[in-house]
Amino acid sequence: MGERPLLWHMNVLWGTMGYFFVLAGYLIGSIPFGLVLGKCLGVDVRAAGSGNIGATNVNRLLGKKMGAITLIADAGKAVLPMIAVSNLMAGAANVQVWVAATGGAAFLGHLYPLYLKFKGGKGVATALGIFFYVQPLAVSLCIVVFVLVVRVWGYVSLGSLIAAALMPLLVFALEGPGHRAYLAVLVAALIWLKHTSNIKRLLNHQENSIKKKG
Image (cartoon, rainbow, N blue to C red):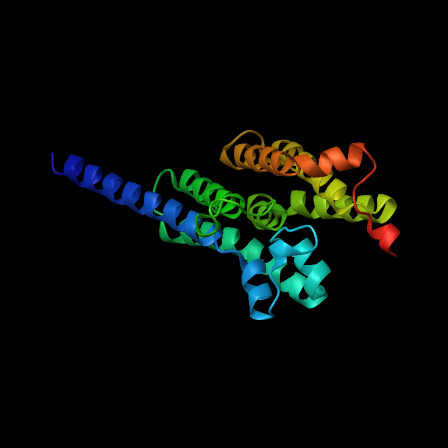
């Protein structure tokens, strides 16, 4: 008789922690590291280049070092909360559900940040952090594909789109259906949604190419 109330209280505790981590993931994901770095150097990255707060535009405006820092920070703000949930909620039966939900919340935070009136980045770097946690081998293969696409055609956006589309397929192939695979599908779909303007420019041959700049 005494085990049931204890089990109920434990489920309530895990559920409360889970919701806390999801909210924390969104708030952490909302931190616009590219914008913050730019402000520290006297540049508003939203007012120059592509106007995006992500690593690509920061690299374009502030150089490779700041672009790399932004990439790492944007990736870290997703993967670190996921690791925290995995460790701190290890005793919960549905821990992987909360891990996936926290990663998804961090990704949504980057795309629709509370601090910037829900106008955020395109999510590639943050997705990279999520994908490294979800399936390191799959994301490594996608990075190779990304590099090859950019090297051949010169379009960073095209490389990002192809790699994002490939990631869920690889996760399904390597792990089968599950929370990680469904998270990969959601992230990939949102990346394509946020790249709508890039897709239009690619179709109209108006997208910026690093080859043309070279």
